[in-house]
Image (cartoon, rainbow, N blue to C red):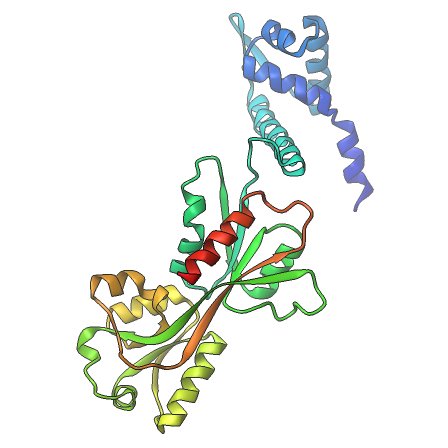
Length: 302
């Protein structure tokens, strides 16, 4: 790393920043000095040193109260985040603090949004937890997981680069893949008739595609693919609008199936889609992650 970064950090005294932080929140030197157990003159001196380092005044006096200048407000915003991060660090390492670090979740961009919501549901009811969601391709998500920028990655397959790595893939659920569509498009006596007559919306997920084309080959049918889709939300929308029949797990179309807008064909494809939570071996994992994974696994078995 560039040495000048460390030099600049050394020039900013974080003890001065702590004093400023207290004065900014109290709005009064006397109360801040009492809170910090220092003299008012010493506190004023520390604030002046910080102002000299930053090159701008941080406060202006309005009556008996100290008001932040524009630079003061900017500095306080950064100071709040710095000290909040410090509390998160202590809570993470001791795992005894009340403040929970944000839960950072990555998910393949092709993964069912309904499945993601089911996974998140136990965490969403907590008011003391911030959740960060990131979608993308596997290489980028696994790199973020490896660098500890993510706590878990949700996927429908184990990581391709898992051999010899610290990645751990836990299967959370396995769901049968079926054919789903508007009721008026599902009135056929056999699977072969259905696939011969109706267009298919096919996800790009490899296991589903290979399984589906294997079924079509056994039936001697060449299916008409009306859409190759890499976004399960779009599979859901296209199916709901009657663009074709979706080859997908039922979780993708949960709301539509429950409302009767979409139905499932009574033919067994013998294709399964698995859902995985990928983590990496850590000494200090997120304190809620183990419970969240266990709850998801129990729901997947139900």
